[in-house]
Length: 146
Image (tube, rainbow, N blue to C red; front, side):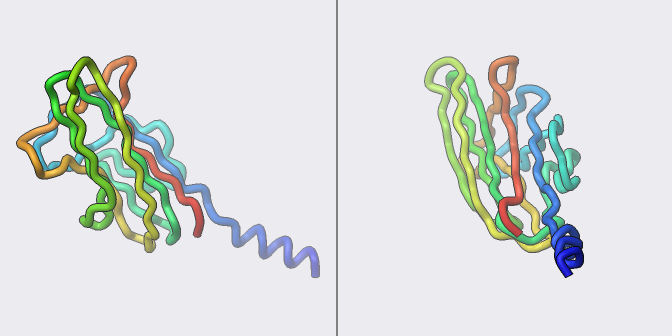
């Protein structure tokens, strides 16, 4: 009986779902536009699409998402994390001097097939995401509990 229980436990294990992608270079993004992080560093579970910048849940559960973003002096940056088109978290940052970075995070319960991605908030005309050897703009997510 113990052998059968161990076998069932092994079959019920939750797969590892996680991704981390970053911008390949600095970009200017129009208001309300999707921010597509094209340089994929990790994509366990294959949920992140570098062509669209969207993550699709293959497992229902509680997820954590984060966007780390940077801008330069005299530029605005304002990312937003959205779930199926509804805002989860937003932030606005003005580069008062030199390059400056910040981040935002969101937790969300997702069903299989739900999507999460980053956009630039529709407040100003455009936003500048600064990226160089010292500053990376990243989008990441991980399944915490199924």
